[in-house]
Length: 301
Length: 291
Image (cartoon, rainbow over all chains, first blue to last red; front, side, top):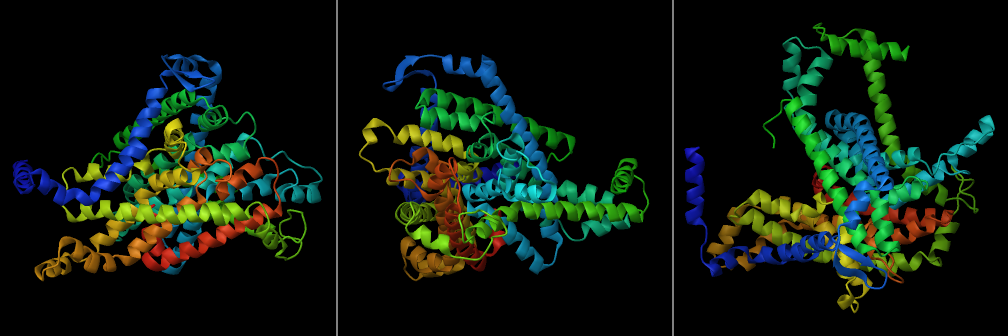
């Protein structure tokens, strides 16, 4: 404690205190900081601000204060259902990304260097290739005359409606966001010292116990980061549900896109964005505290 | 059979049986489950890409997989298709401009964070990677309502797209630049300063050349992210300034054809080459972890 205080005061004296010194020290960071302020922080605040004003068909925003967008979003059963659908979809996608992503992350961390390179490439390339391209692959696979249905027709003589439902949206989203679980899991398992699992085994744990008590516990920060990313991005997904889903697979993200780009109702779209962000943040916080408290890993914050 | 084996694994975990090794069927079942999930995960990632490339090789209008023959017909069609212009005259220049601006801003921010005594360093780092934490749909919406403000009508759409793409790519160029600057020995910089170089000269002659591979990787990452982005572009694109992924997105809402597959394959090949290049420069691990 005392050390921390002297460290702090020490830094305080070293730190430049005149404006010109300050500029001399930090000037290079001013352009990027200002850039994000002007093109990220202020636009987001502006979006939240306009969500409290009325929509007008002629001028888009009419500057009369109103809470109608929020009332509509929170009390209209249609919008309640939509939010619930989005939350449920995100939970399912996150769960499957854990089930599929954890083994792959574990594999990459524990396999031979050559296989690791190949597997990392197989995870990294899809992440970089872009959503639309990968979704197109699923469309061809699931379409009425697509790859799977052609096989079904030839072998069994019938077809299935695979495209345009919640299942195809879920599979598409899992494929798109899987790397976001694999990579942090891999990274945190690789950081575990090699001697810990053999030590647990020597102390009498079987393979599964050693895995659960050492590897799994120590990889939780990576798993947590990955699932939070998947959850947040699925909550906000637009392109995948739009291309793979049917008319009823309306997510909050699609609602934002439809009202902002097609409907030009910016105040309402902003209100949707605000509600969505608050809901997402609250759920992520609950999940984070749950994992932190239940798993007894309180040192990471 | 498989179910029984899985049950025995579960019971071993739940009862916390303290035998030093598990029974053979449990181990076999565990292995089977592990490799099964691995196979499923890898195919979920790779299958769509392989299918897209396969479809693009079809000699006819049919979207058969495996392709009914091997032809490059649709790649020739691409050259005269409505996708050619968005590829070369919209997405490509936007991605190059984005990567250039984003790399410069990323280096500036990373330089100060790494080399200067920054108060609240964690918070400052969080600030520069905030576009990674704020969902892209929210960023896209906020940028759209701000940049489409009446007074900004004179700004061309492509410039607005660059502005938006720089926002979403700054975290990547910032993080790769941070790693790169951290790897440069400060004694070399101090040596140059002692020999009379100004701070800027020392940065340009010592730090910048030594962090080259990090800088190039950040540039390539930003290029790829801008080129493949479909979300910010979906909100900001308009008329003749529609990027390739948005053009494909809009096309796919009505129809799909091997032409889309060929276009998508060209995008895949471009990204593949750049990803391999990044792998050579800083390794997949560093690139993957920074993203």
